Length: 250
Image 1: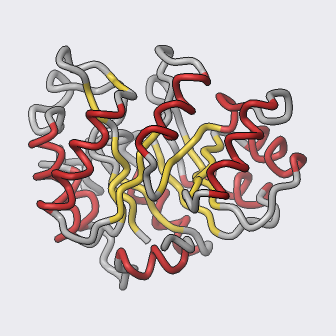
Image 2 (image 1 turned 120 degrees about the horizontal axis):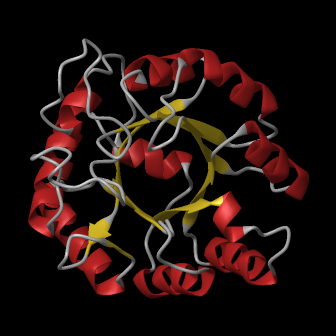
């Protein structure tokens, strides 16, 4: 399974002129990523100033545009706080949009301590919304395991947006810490993205790639777009319908 993450919450045109910001640009990149093999589009939207947004109207408009440009592609929205949003706004966004899939950061929702977050997980399960839990470290994984959720999807994030590039050598500690999950994917900040996600695939995981985390091809050249990063993964990949069945999305 390949998840394409074409923009994220922080990068802009100054980082790469082809980074999609508008809904039209995001929809066009989604089509290119689908053509390259991605089954899922990890969606961030931006406001009129180009800033990260959890605006439900923008999410709906972007999802509709992607449905036209990349028919059948599964859209996963994000609840990322990015230093701008609190838990109530994150949850309200999902409740209003009612997406098929959403990603949530364990360290932002903190369900061990927060009844509101626990109620959100129950609500999402009751409405058939697939939740992928974002885990940024082996410590995050340990907290996730201790909470006792079973049959869940997780995303392992290696490296950081600034200052720490992911390395293949980082991955074994994450994989070793994993408990009983339904499936896991890996994304990696920095120019070793491709090597890290390929190591994750070899270890039984799935891949998330894109300009949210990395702008560079395996050979060190600047990528033309997220679709080019997706296209570097050459083995057989899941279709969107296969991912829907795998994630139990009706």
